[in-house]
Image (tube, rainbow, N blue to C red; front, side):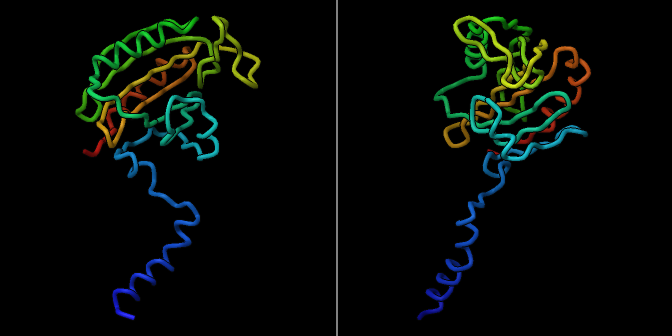
Length: 193
């Protein structure tokens, strides 16, 4: 055997357990981002994050006490601009019953243009209640509904990185108190490429 073959076989033997156990790079390196979560926020484990009903691949999610903050990745939208995503989000939420649009517009996240929309609807403080046929129901396993604020920010990043989705939910009554934490977390976001 040549030294190159020996090194190759050694690498294969040593790396097989890592790949067999499904170890992948952490979400921040896969997603090309970094940020500092607000003090007191607790990162959700993968099992709890997977239970969140959100529009995309959950990269990270945090319990913000009493809300939820999540970073997601969705597909690339060719030639998408923040201004177009803002209009798209507005019409998407406008067509959901029982939601009230609070604001919409364009913002900058880590130097990139992004769409931002805020809406209020009934939910559990961590998500909106499901709707069907124009009717709203209680979130599963929850006997009470409270007005819930959603802040949704979409950052188009290109074919390889897709669209970074930032979602924050909290009870409407807590929004002003939690807003500074959310805004400081958004300002701390750094993006690669």
